[in-house]
Amino acid sequence: PAPVAFAGVDRRQPHQVTVTLSGYEPWHGEVPFDRSQQTMQLIAVLTPIVGAVSVLTEPPGAQISLDGRPQGTSPRRIEGLPVQAPVRLRVQLAGYHAVERQVEWAGQKYVEVKLKLEREPGGKEPRTRN
Image (cartoon, rainbow, N blue to C red):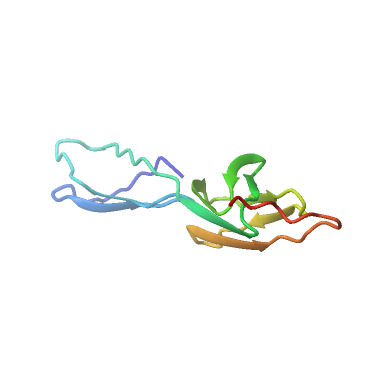
């Protein structure tokens, strides 16, 4: 938790400082000290860790949504997703059963999801353009 105070720090030389917080990129910096000051303030701005999900479906062309927000059609790579929590993936294509999955990051910044869609009873093969 911030703020943090350190006592007994040698102010005659700069120090390497690393600030970490789960779900954020580490912050590293060299901190010079002003010997005339008894205290100093350091502001470390942490950047959230983001990742990407690639969605591939068979057949392709399925509508993709993540956490209820439309993301386009498969195949597709969706970037800039916060990796602190799982995301809910839904794919749907006319004539096929919709599929929902929870995407877990498991410490990774990239996840690939491959789904073979199952045809609905009486579902017709999607038309292809010639």
